[in-house]
Length: 235
Image 1 (cartoon, helix red, strand yellow):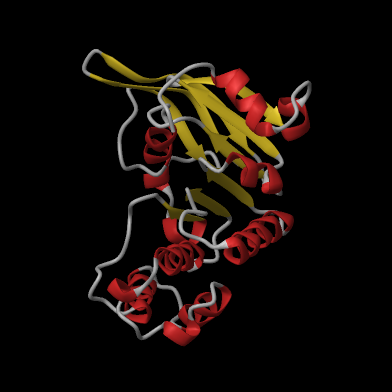
Image 2: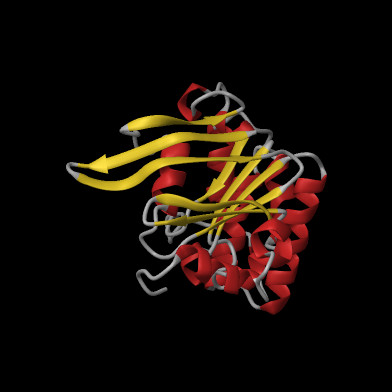
């Protein structure tokens, strides 16, 4: 499972995360919710070894990301804002990633089919819509057939059909016994797919538990979120 243990991050004297702890378990989708600046992206960057914690640990199957033998085969990740070279064709983008990680080239065709981009695989990424770019990012995350899937704002740019498709894919992925950690601003959509919810506010965990427990006493997850997160930076 994914374990975030008393994770603390400071930039100089400015605290970004303070004693953040939660677990994302196999066979479940964990929704990670917070306002802009609450600490979601920093947590994911520390989990994926893109930054170093001031204190605490972020572990995947008991190991730091950089200690995994074949990271892409263990963890599939898509961070908001990350993307391929615009002039590169989608199939070429996936192929070089597969080759550099010793993943069979046949897997490229498989993931293109999974995300629905087979027919546009030779188009340059700069011609893709936002939704198509999101699908390509998911294809990269799925390339190594990983045990863990970590996605940041995967619903951005998807139309209603795309959102339903993404919801089904994430549910099926978790149902196969794998672990899904989903960071999102889309509270209502997160409620449709998540088993567990983690709410972060001002760099601290405000709530952590199964969805029914988090929403108890509230009309919706959105109502629960605003009650738990309190006042803060607008969306």
